[in-house]
Image 1 (cartoon, rainbow, N blue to C red):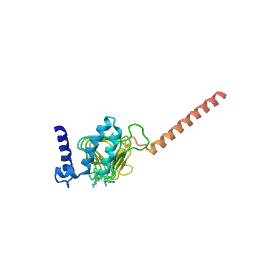
Image 2 (cartoon, helix red, strand yellow):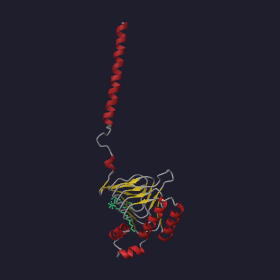
Image 3 (cartoon, rainbow, N blue to C red):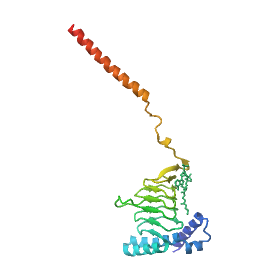
Image 4 (tube, rainbow, N blue to C red):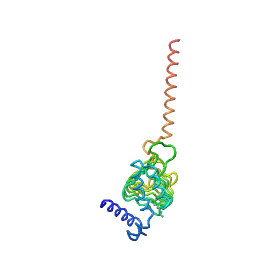
Length: 222
Ligand SMILES: CC(C)(COP(=O)(O)OP(=O)(O)OC[C@H]1O[C@@H](n2cnc3c(N)ncnc32)[C@H](O)[C@@H]1OP(=O)(O)O)[C@@H](O)C(=O)NCCC(=O)NCCS
C-alpha cells in the first residue's frame, strides 16, 4: 500500500514538474484526465495480465469515455507518465512506454496495419511526443528523444534526437542540427575528369595491343 502511495506521489510530482499551470497535487489528482487514465490503466492491465480480457477492456473503455484517452489494457507503461491535456490519445496493445515520458493531446502510438504480433512502438525513458504526433509500427524511440508536434514517425528515432515532419526526419542530435552534408561521403567522391582519363588510357592500351599484334602478323608473313 505504502509503495502504491509513493508511486502516486511520484506521478503527481511529475505533473507539477512538467506542467507550469499545475497548482497543487490535490488538484492534479482530482482533475487531471492523464492521471485518471494512468490509474484506470493500472487496473485494466492487472486484469489483462490475469487473462480477464473482457473486464480489462471494460475498464479501458470506461476510462476512454471519461478521459478521452484510449490505452489498450495490454500496453506496458513505465513510471511517471505524464499525459498533458489528454483527449484524442490512442496507445496500442503492444506499445511500451519507458519511465518519465510526456505525451501531449492527439498522440497515437499505433500500428501501420502491416505487422503481426508486436505492432506498436517502444518508447525509451524521458521521451516527449508532441501534440498530434503519430508514431506508427514496432519501431523504437530512444531515450530522451523528442517527437515534434504533428510529426508522423515511421522509422526508429535514435536516443537524444529530435524528429520532425511528415514523414519524420531527424532534425537534431543531442541538440545539434543534422545537415544533409553529414550524410554525404566527401572522401570517396567520384572525379569525372579522372574517370575520363582512366577510360582513355584503357582505350589507348587496347589500341597499342592491337597494333603490336598486327605488326607481329605482318613480320611473320613477310
Ligand atoms: C520539436 C520540439 C520539441 C523542439 O525540439 P528541439 O530539439 O528544441 O528542436 P528545435 O526547436 O531546435 O527545432 C529543430 C528543427 O525542427 C523544426 N521544428 C520544430 N518543431 C517542429 C514541428 N512541430 N514541425 C515541423 N518542424 C518543426 C524547427 O523549425 C527546426 O528546423 P531547422 O532545423 O530547419 O531550424 C518542439 O518544436 C515541439 O514540437 N514541441 C511539441 C510541444 C507540444 O506539442 N506542445 C503542445 C502543448 S499543448
